[in-house]
Image (tube, rainbow, N blue to C red):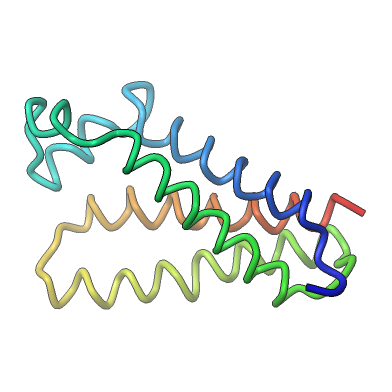
Amino acid sequence: MSGINVWAVIAAAVAAFLIGGLWYSPVLFAKPWQKEVGLSDETLKNGNMALIFGVGFLLALLAAFVFAMFLGPKPALPFATGAGFAAGLAWVSAGLGILYLFERRSLKLFLINAGYLTLAFTAIGAVLGAWH
C-alpha cells in the first residue's frame, strides 16, 4: 500500500458511487434502465437495499483502490483523468459490450451502463489525480 493515499481512494469511491446514484435516479436513467433490465417497481422495492448499497460501495472502493495502484503515487491530474476515461471506455465498457453482444442485451442498456462506468472511472481518475 506504499504510495497509495487511502483518503483519496475513499473520496474517489464516494465520487463514483454518487455519480451512480444520480445516473440511475429518476432525474436521468432510472426508468429506461429499469425497462431494459426488466425489473418491476415491486421487484425494486423488495430488494435488500442495505446489502445492495453496501456491497456496491465496497466494489467502488475496490475499483478505486486498484486504479490507484495502476496510476502509482501522485499521478498528474490530466494523466489520471485521461487514464480513468480510457479505462472506463476502452477496458470496462468494451468488456461490458462483449458480454452484452453474447447476452443479446440492448444497445440502450449498453449505453446507459457503459456511460455510467466511463464517467465513474473518469471521476475516480480525476479525484486520485487531484489529491496530493
